[in-house]
Length: 287
Image (cartoon, rainbow, N blue to C red; front, side):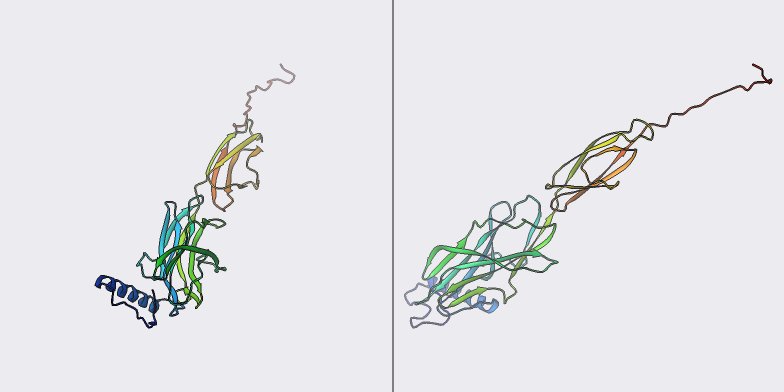
């Protein structure tokens, strides 16, 4: 039972042992401190006493606590989630909310609300992930959780640094309870970087001086297709044909705006040189 405004039976039972009583006092003290430090629509009959965000960086689910943190879990706010390349794993798998209810009050469910946006951009709207009933913790306490939402946090993002911003809510018969950090919510950051795009080529040099029968066959690996090409001679094709001698530079850009550049030198043989010697006639009409 959780109740910040004592009902007639009081907060503690005289039948409790000292360890039980000490535990309950500590638990209620933590809840009181949480109330002072977080925005929480708290009512005597029900409320939130723990929140978590759940994400996966490629090695399984990790739990990070919100501002209402009676479990003393590792906080989410201010965390550097890490640096990731395209194709890496960074998933938002959901969240967890623990609630209490007393008397005739009831809690109907819970949600974690999130948005992802560039640290240099404007935030958009929040998306809610519903947290289903998970466990009856006893004494009116309940746990609501979703651990497999499988939201790919990297989808659709360009290289850069981003916020994951979250808050929690729990609708109840007493009204909706929130953990919102006084409206500022809770933010972690992560960075998305480009993978290496590898470029290779085979080419044919010009066979005659001044000719234009050279060619370049370009290949790429890494990155994400489709690719675009821009050559120093203005061409936008992957390969070049019927080209003269010279140095050709190409920039290849993938679907995520990641780019790589390389240069190829097309050679030609020297010009054919013609030389001669002669003897002029010494007499008019002479041979």
